Amino acid sequence: MDGGNALSIFWKILQYALLTFGEVLVSATGLEFAYSQAPQAMKGVVMSFWNLTTTIGNLWVLLSNAAVRNDTVTHQIAGTGLSEAAFLMFFFAGFAFIAALAFGWYAKRYRMVDNYRSA
Image (tube, rainbow, N blue to C red; front, side, top):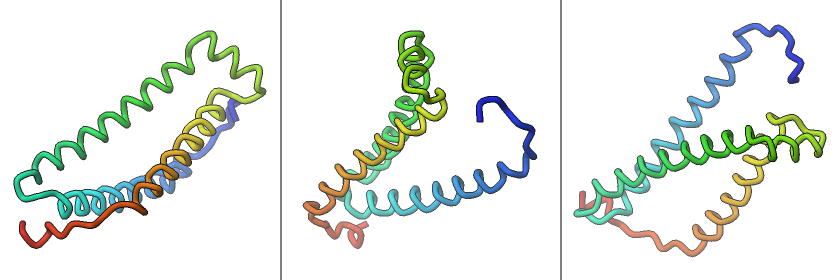
C-alpha cells in the first residue's frame, strides 16, 4: 500500500460520497437531538458545544497524526511490522470502539427530556 500504485481519481468519489452522506446523517440527527434535549434558555449554548466538540475532535486527529511522526513513535511502530497508515487506522478504530462502548453505556442510563415542544 505504501509503495504506491497509480489509481484513478474516481476511486475517491465513492469514499467522499460515503463520508459526506455519513456526516449529513450524523450532524442532522445529533443537532436535532441536542436541540430537543436542551432547555429553552440553553439551546444556543448547546449548539455552541456541538461545534466545540467538532473542534476538539479535529484537534485530537491533528495531535495523533503529529505524534506518529515523532522518531520514537515511528521506531516503535516499525517494530510492530505495521506501516504508519495502518497503525493510525487501527489506533482510531480502537479508540472509536472504546468511545462507542462509553456512549452506549451512557445512553442506557440517559433519561429523555421533552424540551422540543417548548421551542
